[in-house]
Image: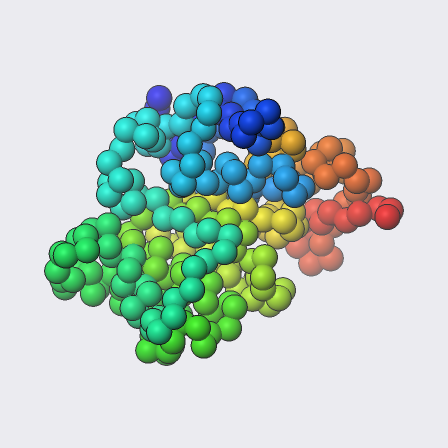
Length: 262
């Protein structure tokens, strides 16, 4: 496998009993790009991102990360390279934002390692880059939904990973906080050169945020490409099984998808 690729998937499948959650997925993801995973509920988006995060294993095919088979990488080495935010983040009871962000340094020093000067600098930089310095001593459970997502993003940044995997990071947020979180992901991608794979329900948000869109349907990869190539009535109808239309954004001219009929 080529070392310049971030992830390579070769005919990957996931089966539970007789049910195929993913089938024959062949995919190449490059470093430094933002990829949006889109598709209807049950299309396999979360299953795919969990495979990339090593939260589960395929039942067929193979996955490589930066040229190495993903299962062959030591856990700590993989954790230093890839940061994962699940769809439902665990509670952080009694923990401040700074303490949560500091957990991102765990792969670098372990449970009994010393938290050193470099660790502190990484945490400080993550708080600054996510605009959380004023909230650093607040309890995580007292934050708004958008602030809490930013805190988890900051923890991923402190991890100093080269790739972020985000499973529906905006699903519980209002539109203002959705835009805030996605703009933050894009700015971090541009400033730090981070690769990112983001599961999104809103294809219009995906088109605005992502360098490429990856579309799944029934556990199969049905399209991958630049947003302009996928934002067509034919492609969107194929992805969502709905009659879809496109109109240009009144300011930018970018294509916006909409459902034609209910």
